[in-house]
Image (cartoon, rainbow, N blue to C red; front, side, top):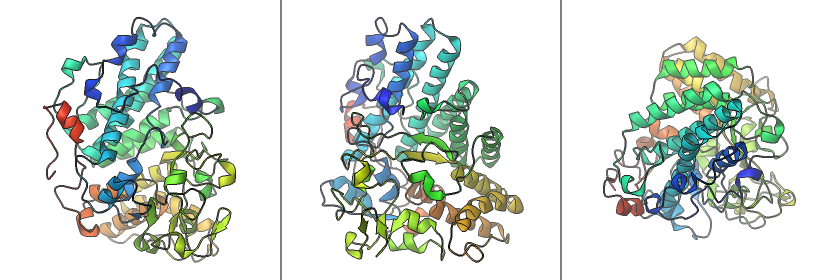
Amino acid sequence: MKLVKYFCCLGLLALASCQGILDKEPLGILDAGSFFQTSEDAVQAVNAAYGSLPFSSGNNNFYWAFAELPSDEAIVGGDGSRPGLTELDFFNHTARTQEFNDFWVLNYKGITQCNTVIEKVPDIEMDEALKARVIGEAHFLRAYYYFLLTQVFGEVPLLVKITPPDELKVPKTPRADIYRQIIADCDFAATVLPVQYPATSAGRATKGAALALAAKTSLYEKNWNKVLEYVAAVKSLGTYALMADYEDNFRENTQNNSESVWEIQHTNLELGVGNSLNQWWCSKKYGDGYGFAEVTQSCVDAFEAGDPRRRFSIAMNNEPYFELTYKNSFSSTKFGVRKYLQSDSTATQKADGDINYTAIRYAEVLLWEAEALAELNRLPEALVPLEQVRARARAQSATPATTLPPIVATGQQDVIDAVRHERQVELCFEMHRFFDLVRWGLAGSLLQDFQTGKHEVFPIPQTELDLNPMLVQNPGY
């Protein structure tokens, strides 16, 4: 039974309104005397903390749009019913773009729930091992929500305790301090979370997920030695391995597999926690697809000849497309997204898919290792994890003897470029590309209309600025 079956109905503990977080009564104070009494209460409370994760229609989680539409992988499609998506594509988004407000509220809703668990669960008389695990899950989830917020907005208010409304009007926290808190939360979580769960608890945060998020945070800090330390810790668990079949990471029947380090669960027919990417990204020519994201020619061109990951990631003319044959007319660019989509015969409604989003795959962990080693000029070592990722793809090609040859170490920049290229094709449409271009300093040269010094982050929502006079808008907005 997927975790989503638990958190979808826990409205008691979640901030249900879509208004700004500052106009809410502190949830923990309201519930402290009546709810947090038993171990069942503790588990339900942390289950609710997972509720902001899915790409469901109820969450309106448009994180994917921030990661893909401003990048060189996608352009906006659809019927114009979400003007914010068009604004993102053309870099004319503003503080009033609705998707930013929804995302801010969604993630602070998750953070509030995590803070409530962290403060209230320690006082419950319950099994100490279960208590530690529940608190560890909340620490990890809080770290994850803050990581997303810093990716999107840069500096944001750091709230790590239940805070009365009159104390919520606080300024933004420097990103370095937020990163420090993220890593501290991950370090704590890694000491108490299990390496694995039974299948009935698929989707809960694990020790490996905590270590991996700390590695990713270190990557964003360009602390290459710390990246290597955390990656080594992930690998030492002996839990993760690349799937032989790349596409098993995106099929509904082969999820939560050995390559999955941190996987956000979706389920069909479970009270609004289905995967709406199945509708948002699917061509309008297939069922009730919206076609909000269309693949660019440059994204297609990034794949080397014969790379099988292209057909697993992108649909092209005359190729199978679920029950149809894909045609150029299915997209204004001629190319369509395949990842996170499924046949209409396997989902009762288009917006209620059950393919998960793997936020961290082991392949990405290997590419973090390769990137850190390349940045440290340890080139022969960097080629080892890079080759692991390429070898899996090569083995699935029609001509493995000549496709995706191993990279040969030359200069440092050549190896860095090879790792960056591999990230693009291995993780195509997995919501990394725009943030990668920003952290590499390449967005200004590769993205039309990108303004250096402004578009590295998105604007603080106007609603939050109105509620909190201590907040200052990001530069350029």
